[in-house]
Length: 154
Image 1 (cartoon, one colour):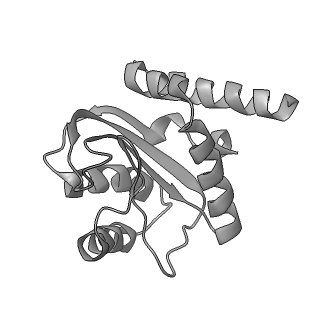
Image 2 (cartoon, one colour):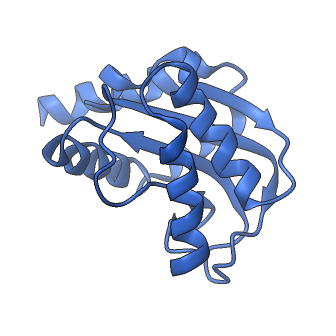
């Protein structure tokens, strides 16, 4: 579950960035500082966007940068950055980006599960409201936990 791998210290709100590369570095540094990834993961992620374009913009206003290939994390984690000022990532349909997630897991099965859970959240307007108006990281975590509890009951 996302709430198992999203910790308070993995969330930064109102981060100032000049461009999409800085945004990727900001979200990646969170996981780097917590020994989830190596610096090469961030470098590979930026390289991928330069080569393949803004495919990481997965929903309106949301980017999910990631490295491809053999770049599993040392443990699983998801970092979240809310940008103070939205940034254009080059995807005209879904620009500008305000929310950046970086999901890293130790295996592909866990990655797909985390991606699926995040995708479900991004279908909810209420989640966007929480991301936009949260004053503390705990508010985002609490919303995700509540949502997970409701999914379990169904």
